[in-house]
Image (cartoon, rainbow, N blue to C red; front, side, top):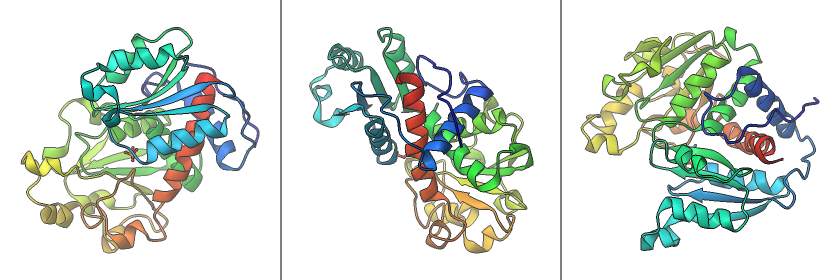
Length: 308
Ligand code: CP
């Protein structure tokens, strides 16, 4: 497959600012990388910093690997061992690293809009990539999920029925996935979870919303399971892990309600035995590790688009 780098944006803060054509172009480029396409040294001599104010395994490491494959210099900033612990502000932290000549920042932050705020302060030519902010956006997760769906089900999203299950209210992954699925013309988007974990704003517009997991599974082509954020129990939004598993845990028996060739996705980290059983997570329909692998390819395409 041949593919060109998509038109350049200044930053990748969310998927709303990407046109459907840019999203498609990014996905094609990512597929070329995923298929073993030659990685150009597009970032040779460019310094990229992973600026994480929140923990991460998949996103941070796959961005680092992606940048390395494109020839970049990588700086790894960890807030817990930095001068943030002495009271330095996020903005001062960013400006100091920017002053070292770093041109690319991959930023994760617990605050909604925190990455966009840093982007607004960036010098011309400096690009920020949102690696997850608050409950708002996780654009590269959305893209890697779409790539995983395309690989399994083809490029025609209008033929797909997809269900997103769990704590949608607090999930930046769900918001980015919902936006991407709509932009790519997904045939039917179902959303399922306890009422206490479903958003009350217009996040779910156009979706078929249900609290009945068994009904929501009927005939779907793909399931996107979300992590139950355990702190939601402390907030009283979930009765107990056992109740949650009984009502919304994906078991092999439940999975049989979906289309026979349905795929199971989860952004990780998984709560095994809560939202998903071991048998499903490690079973033949699971694409969880394909998602992780696709993360490297998608992040190469995104870094190349912004900094190449
Ligand atoms: N999916 C995801 O964002 O995982 P990490 O928190 O490990 O980066």
